[in-house]
Image (tube, helix red, strand yellow):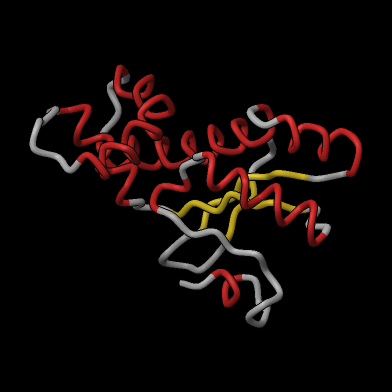
Length: 148
């Protein structure tokens, strides 16, 4: 679902970066820096969603690694892996594991943005930039913001 609909904004009012698994890569950091510096954006929302396919693919790869995956998919999975891997040691059933992994991945992305780029760190400290995590429910349409 387009985030403009989720948050009831018309096109052009939100600076939206969409990618599988809400991973953080240099091009996304640069885009956020651009939005914050050029447009005065002061709120960044890392919006994941339940039943995320990229997080599910990461769990599947950790359960049974394969050499036949696309290197492009591996680029996504490898960025999600650090948030998900610690959860794999628990005796959690699959649905609960996916829920926990989605939330852990959102939080890891928020942390990476807050502490992984000097320009964003400065904007947070000096200009009031706020970076938060949230999860969208595909079933209900509700967005739950995290206390992070």
